[in-house]
Length: 113
Image 1 (cartoon, one colour):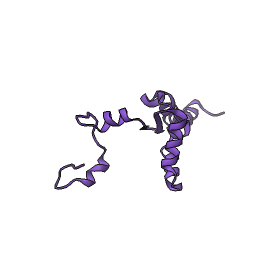
Image 2 (tube, rainbow, N blue to C red; image 1 turned 120 degrees about the vertical axis):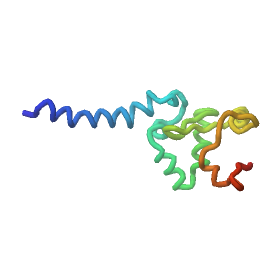
Image 3 (cartoon, one colour; image 1 turned 90 degrees about the vertical axis):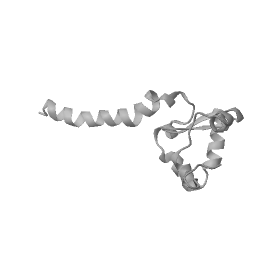
Image 4 (cartoon, rainbow, N blue to C red; image 1 turned 45 degrees about the vertical axis):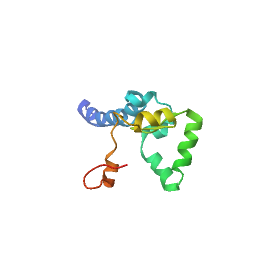
């Protein structure tokens, strides 16, 4: 007969993975209420596959046509498709900073357009 401690040792990592890989992105994340396909919400690799196929832009456009101006395209990524969102996010006086990716375009240590 299998002891209770062996069951606990096997069951604990399984429950942790279920919570981390399924429950967190689908139900517990603040982004869980943003519409979009569940496969995109679960993993960043789904969008990476669209990149690999060369269809990222087309796919995101189709998602916007289906789900509306705000679509979840990754576990921690959202795509906006509206002029109001563009102005809010990138407009003058925006409280949203740029990602680290844009730092490679700095000129003499200063951000440019």
